[in-house]
Image 1 (spheres, rainbow, N blue to C red):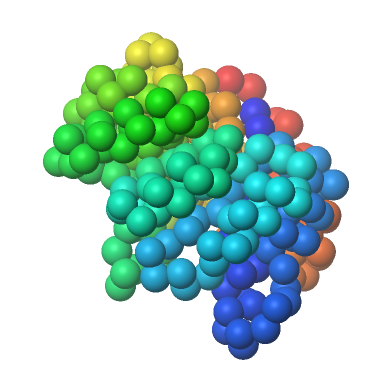
Image 2 (image 1 turned 45 degrees about the horizontal axis):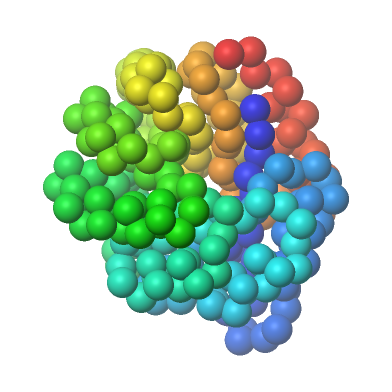
Length: 239
């Protein structure tokens, strides 16, 4: 299992004061030195944290594969086609939300997603869809012929007891369905050192994209230690 580190919230701290620091590219390089396998950034339409120049610099100045999270909007699609990250992950996006609140509605936005996925495919970019473990959404993703999906783990992380167990069973079923359809299974949102092991019954997990909790731990421990801590936990995964 691989770790993609999302460094958006390094930029959140920077934007709070409008300074040039802390630098998310420097954070990405520190994550790479600690053993991370990829870097994720979300270029939001409102540019609340990551800025356009950050994305370009991520592509040029850090060594790991770059995963660009993005809403399916014309402006951001055009930027992705110019930057050419290793992977684009299409996510739902609302200006009023604090963070992504759920999975992409692939069924309801099928035509628009089909157009963008086709453009990305023609440009040689790998496409992932950030979705809930819903059979209808997974079927729609498979019909778009995307090579991978990212299962939304936020609800699972928020729940406790029987409700978390129900979410876990949905993730297990969703991972099996995606894998059987030939899609790589990634996962992310809300994962931290306290809840990560509870996710381990989910099969076929390839990459976990984790940001907020690693950045929060890095404030106390440093980026190298925070990434190493997560990687150590991940080594216990036995699919």
